[in-house]
Image 1 (tube, one colour):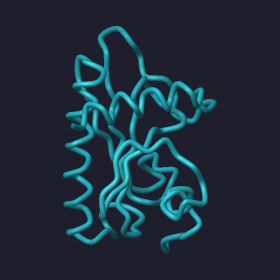
Image 2: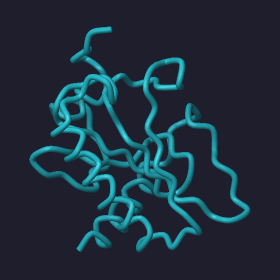
Image 3: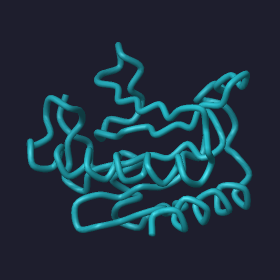
Length: 139
C-alpha cells in the first residue's frame, strides 16, 4: 500500500483539520484522540509520511518514540493512572485504521475498562481540558 497523503493525520499535520494539540516539535505532533479509550488518551505521530513501522525512516521513528516517552511521562503526572499503555498497530490485520504511523498513549486505572475506540467522539471541551493538563505536566 502506498502512503495516502489525504489520511486524517496528514490533514491534521497540514492544518486542514483541527486537533487538541498537546505537544509539537520539528519532528512530531501529539494530540488528543477524539475517540479516547480512557481519559487522557493521546496520539503521537511523526511529521514524516509513513504508513507503519515498516515504512518509516529509522530517524523519524526514533524521534517519534522520544516524543511518545515524553507524553507518557506527562500523562503519568497529569492523571496519576495505575499504568500507562503505549500501543502501536501495523496494518489492517492488526487493527490499524489510519495509515500514518502513530502511537496511542493511554492512561489505565484499576477497575476502569477501556472504551471501544471507534465510538462516538468525545466532548471537545473535555478534550481541551485534558490537553491543557498534559501540556502543564510537560514542563
